[in-house]
Structures are given as C-alpha cells and as structure tokens.
Length: 137
Image (cartoon, rainbow, N blue to C red):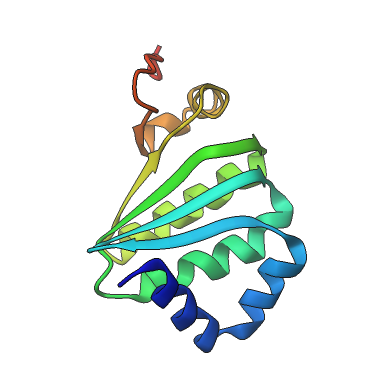
C-alpha cells in the first residue's frame, strides 16, 4: 500500500486527524513499506504533539498487516521528555500487539538524550549512515 493510499484510508477513517494535523502543522508523516510502517517526525516533538502522534500510531498498532514500526527522527529539530515518554508508550503498545519498534535516522542530539536517560536500552536504534556515536558509553 502506498503512502497516498494509507493517508487516504486514515483520512476516511478519521477526518478529524487530517484536519488536526493540518491545523497544528505537526510534522508527522506515515508511510507503508510492505509489513513495515514508518512514522516520520520532523521539526518539534514535544508534549503538544501527543494527540497527533497517538492518532498517527494507533491505526498501525491495530493493523494486523503491520509487523514492524520504524520511527524516523532524522528531521527532528527538538525533542523533550514528553516526547520520550510517547516513544516509550508506543514501544509498550507495540510489544503487546507483537510488533517491533526501531528508531531510525537518530541525530546526535537525540541519541545523547536517549543515552543520558538510558532509553537507548529500550529501543533498537539505527543511526544515520556514517555516524559513529557510542550510545552505550
């Protein structure tokens, strides 16, 4: 299923989400790649993103065809502790549903937050190509 088909399906199921995202200009985008769903978060990921993020991932958790969820944070400019809590909540819900979560494109600033809070032990993390940051050190 292509990204446009998925967006159209979500919009049909929940037009309020489409309007909400448009109004807040929240940088959350969803793509389907086979059995993998990718949630791309850009700009600012903080407590004001809670509802939009939850409404974006909930259909993916409920979708039996989705086995893996990638959270692409490569375009993330800012992330606070509330956003970290949202990622932990997503991980917990995904585990209950038998799905795997991986953070991809993790910029150095986000990787440091994950390391300092020990959240790097909760998630599978893929750094941008060529980046060598010791998340465990």
